[in-house]
Length: 99
Ligand SMILES: [Mg+2]
Image 1: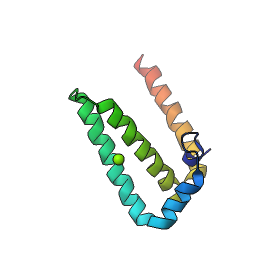
Image 2: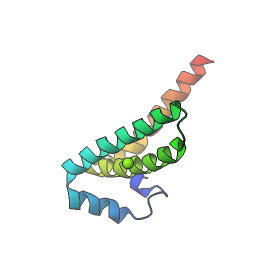
Image 3: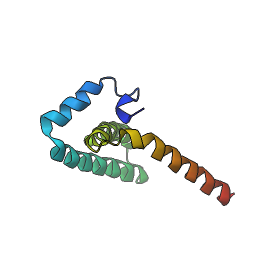
Image 4: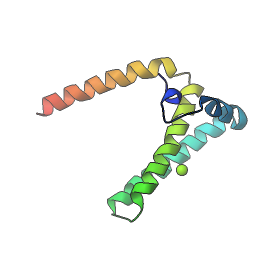
C-alpha cells in the first residue's frame, strides 16, 4: 500500500496528473510550503487559538496529498511500508523501555 492508495485519496490519477502538470521541483517546493503551514497550524493550537483544529485538519490533508506526490517522485512506494513498520516497531520498543 502506498500513500496514494490510502482511502483518503480517492483518485490516484489526480496525484500523478499534478506531478506531470506542475513538475517535480514545483511539487517538492509545494510540499515544503504545506508542511510549514501544518507546523504553523499546530503552533496556533498551542496558543489555544480559535479554529486551530479545523486549520490543522485542512493542512494535514494538504500535507497528505503532497506526501503522496513526494512518495511517487522519489519512487519510495516499495520502501515506505517496510520503513514505517520498522519505525513503528522501534517506537513500540522505546515505549516499553520507558515503562
Ligand atoms: Mg495548506
